[in-house]
Image (tube, rainbow, N blue to C red; front, top):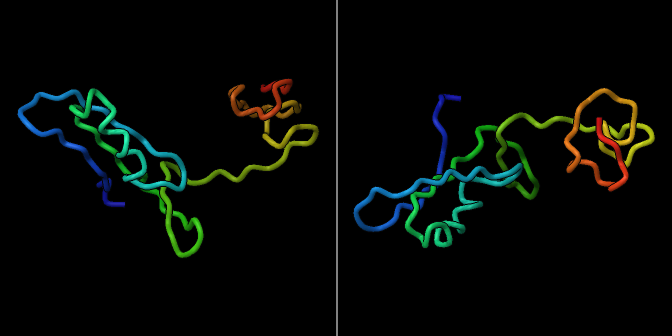
Length: 107
């Protein structure tokens, strides 16, 4: 990696200054994934920057997706609904929203 990021941008017409919004996509997407929100942010008068994650990975059918860090392999924790740290005795920490079962306890 050369320290440069690919990005997509919405630059409003006219003279600024304009408020700036930076939108970061999720795994498997690219820089254009969130650019469609630009017309809805500040009435389309915001500078919207959408950088593309630097980690490239195949997502199928010859296409590539991007992320912000290398993928982390998940393994099913025994006694859980499938997420490490949810309803199990593992010491890994997971936020509550990652627990698929409402009754799961995340550590």
